Amino acid sequence: MHGSRREFLRAAGLVAGGALLPAPLLTGRAAAATPAPQAAAASPWDQVPAILARIVPPAFPDRTFDITAYGAVGDNTTDCTPAFAKAIAACNAAGGGTVLVPSGTYRTGKIHLLSDVRLQVNGTIRFRTDHGSYQPNVFTRYEGIECYNFSPFIYANGRTNIAISGTGTIDGNAPAGDWSSMGSGGADSDRLRQYGADDTPVDQRQFGEGHKLRPNMIGLYNCTNVLVEGVTLTNPAMWTLHPVYCVNVTVRGVTFRSTNSQGDGCDPDSCTDVHIHDCRFDTNDDCIPVKSGRDRDGRRVNRPSQNIVIENCKFSGRWGGVTIGSEASGGVRNVFAQDCQVNPADFPGRYPCKYALYVKTSFNRGGFIEGVHLRRVTGHGLERAALYVTLNYETGGSLPPAVGDITADRITVDGAAQAFALDGRSADHIRNVTISNSTFTNVTTAAPTVNYVDNLVLAGVTVNGKDISTTQPPPAARYEAENATISQGAAESDHTGFSGTGFVNTDNVAGAYVQFTVTAAAAGSRTLRIRYSNGTAVDRPMAIAVNGAAAATRSYPATANWDTWATDTLTVPLAAGSNTVRLTATTAGGCPNLDYIEVA
Ligand code: GCU
Ligand code: CA
Image 1 (cartoon, rainbow, N blue to C red):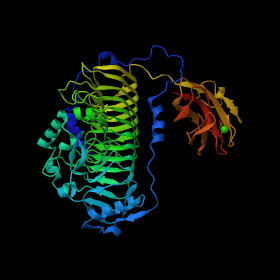
Image 2 (tube, protein in one colour):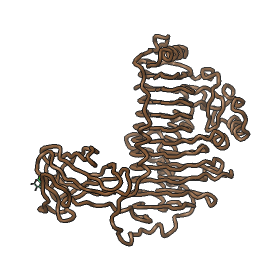
Image 3 (cartoon, rainbow, N blue to C red):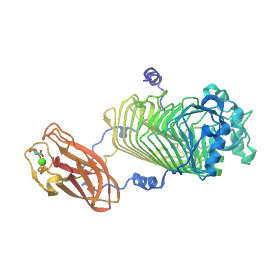
């Protein structure tokens, strides 16, 4: 996919410039001596369970308001704008429920959501292309600056408990209209930026009909308890899904197809507690850009985006997968992204992403970007640096943004112009960047860019097979099974390949267990590795309990023979100090043979 285009960009050398990594960093260095095993420190990821516990999607009363009962006709022609408005008003007046869009294609202008309403889209909503359908102006934030403009196609302001869900499609239909001719706003964009710079009262910043600021497709403002689930969102005029000043937002199972210019996917803008998961992005711009306002206007509003958790997403798009900025003047903190795929073969999209992580800001923005964490992210065919952090997105300005506390762990990228580029400024260093346990292959420019970075830690990082680590990851603490507490089994050594003095062969019964005592320096989630062999053809599942509480159930498949060992890796919660980890056979086969566990 995209082969020729990508090859062209590589050949053209369109990669981030800047100084090369200082020579010593490029030399693989073995740790001088292996330090004594230590319990691993707490991880920033330990904040995630508490964030996710707060993010609860809204529930709706069991009442249905079918739009066809309010005059809607799914003939792709009839204007259903009044029917949507009536059905939503009736649903809200009744105390909430579901407004149903059944099969069929419903043409409509703006849809304004009210509290306690779920818009359930099983058919297709196709938006009208005339500008008048999005008048009068409503309060919006256009590229990070507040103003009054066209209504987003779907809009809510100040609502509680709202959802857009279903198996259907919401089609912005932008290519059929003249939205694209408005381009990036021209003189209107300049005027809006000047209003922001001058602190012009927001109600005097009027655009809409006769102006060139394109509306976003779904704009949700000042809403609490928001769910967007399942639907396919396609053909927006500009950005696709734009939650602004919202708290408690879930976006799950959504497919984004936004291939018009500036077609961002999901832009959380000055939002708190956002969970975006199991979504697919095929965008013409950033897939998930986290934002918080632009320049002086963003600082005036001064609301950060914070506690954003992104999981199990597939990214194809013209710029970044996980993006922070560029409109981040109100600050961004605590962004977590895990188990995501960039440019996956099974979801190619129209454009490949250039970056897996793209942090972009400037001295015009000011503000802060602190706490950005990626783990278990895979990528292919990234046109530029897999991880790119720049404070040089624009020239000019006098407000150094504070950017730091960025971690990337277990990043596996095959094909990129560069592994990473960290581009600070002499007057504003990027602080505290750790890249660990990461492998970058088929990288065309072997040397990463590192300009003005304080405390860069590279631990277990290879580029094209060469170890560029400045340190090694803390060694895992290993606990041999033969030294653990064994119930219904025995330590043996009649196979090869084990570590220590042997392994544990449990009896072939359910309930046989091996219990380890492990220590942790601080409470939090840890990586647990279990080394086992299974010389049979039948899985040997085990229940894993930590301190008596069930933590996981895992299946242990054949390893060819009893001399061949495999390692299973999972994450478990540990308390500070001493912990028990018990592995219990759950079937009559017993446990697989157990060599050791490691805790990192
Ligand atoms: C064989 C093997 C043991 C293993 C056992 C089992 O006896 O030698 O190491 O534990 O099979 O099936 O559990
Ligand atoms: Ca056995």
